[in-house]
Image 1 (cartoon, protein in one colour):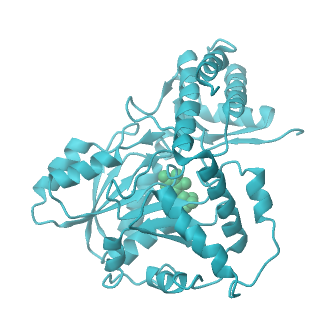
Image 2 (cartoon, protein in one colour):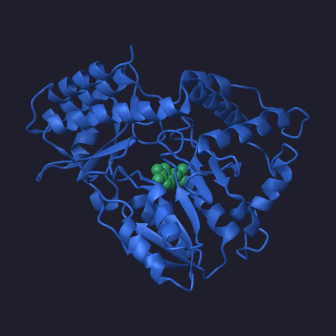
Image 3 (cartoon, helix red, strand yellow):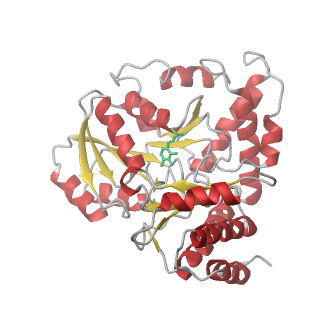
Length: 389
Ligand SMILES: *Cc1c(COP(=O)(O)O)cnc(C)c1O
């Protein structure tokens, strides 16, 4: 089909042409004396995205899933108790990993559409007077339901109950797009990946650890080798990596960081809010609802619930086959019930308006009872009235 395929999935996201160009480099020797000039500043600059001065950033040639495993195996011991709230596919998968690795996983089920229930968490932590819970595994932005949890609130609940547990946060679809404050929130392991807010292909787990977490790498008894942070620390200090570096990805990351810093990280957060809000106005104009309940709406992805009797998969396939746009599917428990619009990464008003128009066409083709142009009109009004001078 002529014209571009536009990705409106919440990862992989669209890669800016500047980043693609930056990655188009001949292979080089990752043991050369100039390699540290690439790696060291990138690791330093990443801290400004995680918003940490005291923590340390790492990159592994892997994906976000490996990031979960790095956090668990480098700081905990088999049989340790961890607390997790399950409210979507990603919190589910993290829980599943924790179980498969042999942790004692305490799972609290939360309705899909909501996030971490802070009062319940605080009560549970208070009750744990022996401090058996060693870590809290918190999914900041649940990409499957478009739900953002309040991590500042999690830290408050931990402090209010004087609980010393580690705080691990999955920020794969939030870091670099919506506010994430590692130091302020007292996050011990922050986990991200290259193909979401960093606007790169999949292939890097991008992580940051607190000094408290890094200290535990000396005593953690989980077997690990490829994912051992101690090897990374030893080599990164010299500007190298323990094994072959994904050099073009690091060149791409350097360019992505430059783009984010040029825009200004606060402006990046504001842009994601504004773009998301236009999409939300469109959804309301269609008379449809988000999967996310009020207060939990994500600024990087919206999961839209289709009316009774409709199958969200039809909207997604019509959108792809007729209009060449890719929408996110409903995963597992919400399969067929929601489709998702990713508004994360390299996006602007007009790209989202194209998406909203394409979604309208696909819904009309599938007999949805919506007024043609209603979503586009609502988004246009919002974007025009909030556009920069
Ligand atoms: C995409 C995503 C992951 C998984 O990342 P992979 O790179 O596919 O391993 C984990 N958590 C969240 C919240 C995600 O959005």
